[in-house]
Length: 465
Ligand SMILES: [Zn+2]
Image (cartoon, rainbow, N blue to C red):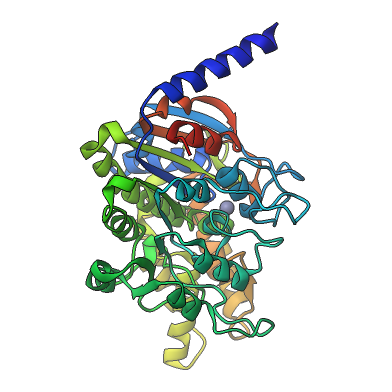
C-alpha cells in the first residue's frame, strides 16, 4: 500500500512537472568536496569575522528549496569524483574511478548535458580545475578510467558543446597516443581557443564554439586557489560570465550549464581550513552571477547547487563546546603556496632559513603570536617541526593529494585549524551528506533526502530533456 502511494505521488509530481513550462535556462553548480560542514563553516566564519555569533547566509544557502544528498558509489560508501560525477551527470551509479560509464566499463551513460544538447539547447561546461578532470569530464566523456585525461580531451572536441572553460587540458599530448594533441583537435572541431577573460572578450563575437583556458596555466593545470590568486588570474565568476554571454548568443535555444568549484575538494584533501572557506566563498560568487541572471529571467531559469561528496570529514569543534573560525582570516596563503614560498625564500638567501626567519613568516602569513595567541605546546610543536623540516637542510615534502607541502607549512595549517576549532577526520573523502539547494522553475523538486542519481533525473524531467 505504502509503495503504491509513493508511486502515485511520484507520478503526480512528474505530471505536475510536465504540465509546467520547462525552464529554458538551467544552471547546475557542483562544489567538489563541499559537504554540509564546509558550507556551515563558511557561514560561521563570515559571521565571526563581523563579530557576531551566528551565521551569514551565502547566496546559494538563501535559495528557497534544499535537501540532503546521499553520495555512495556502486562499489563503495565513499565515492570518488568520477563515480559521484557520473551519478550527478547521468543518474547512474558506477564504481569509483569510472567516468561516465556503468561498472562494466563499457556501457556509456548519457549525461543530461548530452541530452540537453540533443534537444537543441546550447551547453556550457566550466571548472576551476583542468577541463578534462573527473567532474567536468562526466558531462561529455565516457572512459573506463578518469585517468585517461588525453582521451577525455579528445571526447571534449567530439562533444559539439558550445562552450568549455577551465584551467587547461591535463594531458594535451600523450606519449602512448600519437596524435595532433587536444588543442589542434579542438580547433579542427571548430573551437576558438581563448586564453584568459580579456582574450575571451576579444574573440567571443566571431567564435562559433569556445574553449576558454587560463592565460598562463600553472604546471598543475588548475586555476589558483582564491586565497592565492593574483588580479590577472581567471576566476570561476569570469568563466560563468563568459559562459552566460556565449550561451545568450542564441537565447531562443536555451541552455544547460554546469559549473564546478573544483578546488574546495583540493583544500580539504590538505586539511587547509582557511583555503577551503575562501574557495567556498569564491564558488558562491560565481553562483551570484547566475542568480543575477535568474532575477532577469525568473520564469525561465532553474539553478541547482550541490556537491559530489564531502572531503576531509570536516568537524565543527574540537570538543571544547566552542569554535573560533575568525582566526582563519589571518592566513593569507594556501599551505601549498606557503610551502613553495618558504622554499623560494631559502633559495633567495642561498641558505637554510633560521627559526627566527620562519617565525617572522608565520607571523605575517598565519597571524601566529601577533594576532592569534598560541599555547606553549603549539609554539613548541612549531619549533620542533622547524628542526625536523629545516634542521638538516630542506626537508622532504609531504605528498598531499593535489600538491606537495613541507612539514612546517603542514603543521602551521594543522595548528590554525586547531585554534579555529575545525577538526579533520581524514585527508580523503567521506561518506557524509552533501547539500542541494535550488531556486527557479522546478526548484520545488529538490527537497528532502535524495540519492545523487535522482538530481539529474529531476533536472531532466523539469527541463524536459
Ligand atoms: Zn570530487
